[in-house]
Picture 1 (spheres, rainbow, N blue to C red):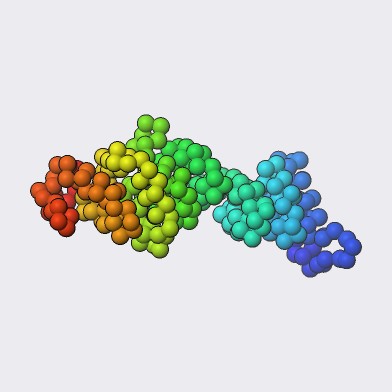
Picture 2: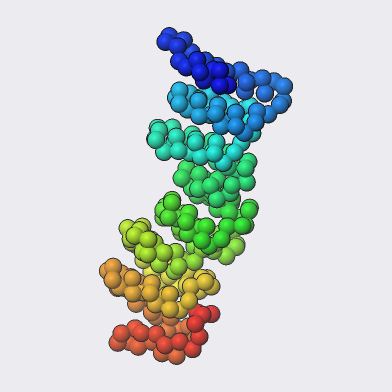
Length: 256
């Protein structure tokens, strides 16, 4: 490989290093002997540097290669620069990440492709995503549909993420616009919608729901704020919620 690198490019001729990788990868496919991780990575870099995504697609999907996190990252980053081919790069990177057991990165690729239902199935399949993992996911891929799916029941199973805590997180990391959109969507469903979310959210304490109500009030969602406070007043564990200032006194720290 180093000899072909040293040759460099020859005007009017195919890039010798690219020809080298084409030959190596073809032989690996024919003889069913995988190319090692280092050569795989170098080959992918070479193909992308020559803008031969078609070759990289063929190598990843057809040939016998040894995948690595670095190979997935190179393709993912290339897609960030080449927006026309971004979806193809995300799909390729997802293949590599999945093969390497890098489930958080594979999940991000699914979400960035807009495959929200596929992402939810992926979460259900592997079941090793923490709340912190999913919070980071919505920060990197703040799709309203994704957040809604994560904070609602899915195929009869409880929500993967707390709606209240997700909303507070968005406002805490300067993603207010996304938080506002989320409030607009839940506001459409009226009191029944927010009550259903609250009842099915075992992770968000009463104090945190009070913070959510305050955020609603601060951003013009007065009715939604009142609906949240109304639900809180109806729940066990509350000794007093003042009508004047909506301050909360608790018998216990946990909502239920």
